[in-house]
Image (cartoon, rainbow, N blue to C red):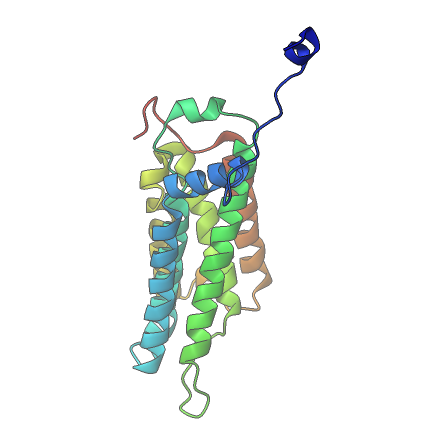
Length: 226
């Protein structure tokens, strides 16, 4: 062996077959730590419940035609915001600059999944011949889920992720009361008709503020989780 051979650095070993890139593995671990698979199962259950409710006429008339879908939409938003909880607590905030990107990305993807699964449930349960379908169509599904999710994200800044579900469910209770009492204020957007501009503006403002604040600050955490 010569001196020239010693100076040569060994060639890097080839990655084994089926090797998963580290970025993909870290992303998967992040999703697992947020219980995303369980959240998707819960969102699917909300969509199936909406479909069954339409098929079996559980809320086909009266106030229930708007109240029950509103409750399911708030439940879907509650499932979304609970996933913001980190089991690692404050140390996770020092893991790198990609954490805010993961926060906003995961929130948007789960909100989209919630809207898609609820809309799919409404579409499967829709039967024009039997006059079965959502009373106001699927537009309120988008508005209400995003608005309730914004409330939940804001709530997570104070309560933490595990209790963030309180925000959407409490706010939908206020909207239920507004629906029964025939209030017309735009901040009770879930009780407003689908074409109500003020309701859309209020819901989108709540979602935007909640998403931005959550992305920048993150949920309230303790040193070792909740």
